[in-house]
Image (tube, rainbow, N blue to C red; front, side):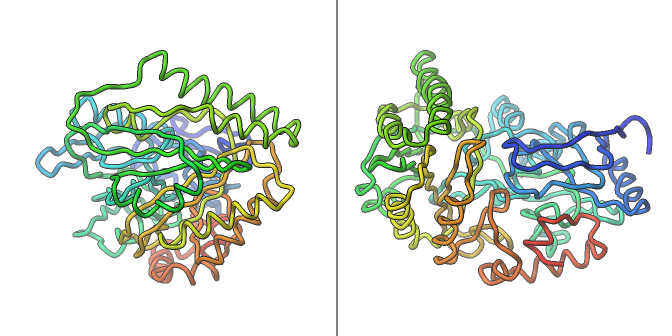
Amino acid sequence: MTDTYARTTSAWRNWAGNVTARPVRAVSPASVDELADVLRKAAEDGLRVKAVGTGHSFTATAATDGVLIRPDLLTGIREIDRTAMTVTVEAGTPLKRLNTALAREGLSLTNMGDIMEQTVAGATSTGTHGTGRDSASIAAQIRALELVTADGRVLTCSAEENAEIFAVARIGLGALGVITAVTFAVEPVFLLTAREEPMAFDKVTADFDQLVAENEHFEFYWFPHTGNCNTKRNNRSAGPAAPPGKVSGWIEDEFLSNGVFQVACSLGRAVPASIPSIAKISSRALSARTYTDIPYKVFTSPRRVRFVEMEYALPREAAVEALREVKAMVDRSPLRISFPVEVRTAPADDIALSTASGRESAYIAVHLYRGTPYQAYFTAVERIMTAHGGRPHWGKVNTRDAAYLAGVYPRFGEFTAVRDRLDPDRLFANDYLRRVLGD
């Protein structure tokens, strides 16, 4: 191993601070060839290997006590193909850099999640998604990927080449190899009009199917201990662009959604009894607004208040009943919940371990402020989600094991068979993967 990309390391922590790992060494390979050498050397030394992104997963999917691969030198756009309408990007590139680079070229992804701090490989490998009636997760927009396997081979995978690997590797959990490049479908940049509006819980849940059907992208947040929600509808627009004003945008997105919310969460953690009163005030603080801008400026927003999160994907038709059960559970319990509950949707896709694999889905996500005990709340919610056949987000807190997951993913065995072939010695294993995939 050369000194150009090897270094000693201390403890690694994820963004939320709930996962810590102490790898033997951390490396930052500057090329695919250097990465292949890293894998061969780790195998010779009997060390496990995990690639890490920006640590935005709440699970230990990237944790290792062996070799930690940092992708900070594997960044940038390799190619834009305007005939095929694709972009090929190095796997360590943060989504925010990809989005801004595409915008400069007059291009955009079709859909994306609500933050863009993650690396391309980290976001896709864990199934990061936004909300959409017709457009699916970030991984569903992949047209090809480059994968370095345990034996150092470099594979190009697409629907035409290594198709059986491509079918499972778009959401691969880091279990099949190390992704070094991703090719996404793109389209000419377009405008979205966002309409944000407070709405009563009973009205949102009663009209949920209609709201999803009428909007390209619909999501809402319910504030526990209240009957209040905030809704967001994003639809394509002919323009003109009308972004939020600098002052009003700062008040909504920074002062209220981050600054004031941070203070409210800190107070709630110190004095839990104050949380219901704070929730009633918070749920009325954000006013209705409408604005129009390019996609990444509408889909994404800053998230500076740190939290821990659990999210489950349910069959779309089960979402409202499950959410009502969550509300009833919170209302009758002594729990004090300072964070809103987020609800989004996705169409069915064809990725083996996608949370929307083979079924139209709705997502229910629960959060708690970092440092707040979350086990009782998450356990109660998880019990409701699993009763409806829920699939946990791969990068968010859950307690499910391989036996459960094999029952809710019809193509689970297809994934594990490819894993057995590509990584029979489990170079890329860790405790989290042993739990969710088995050994």
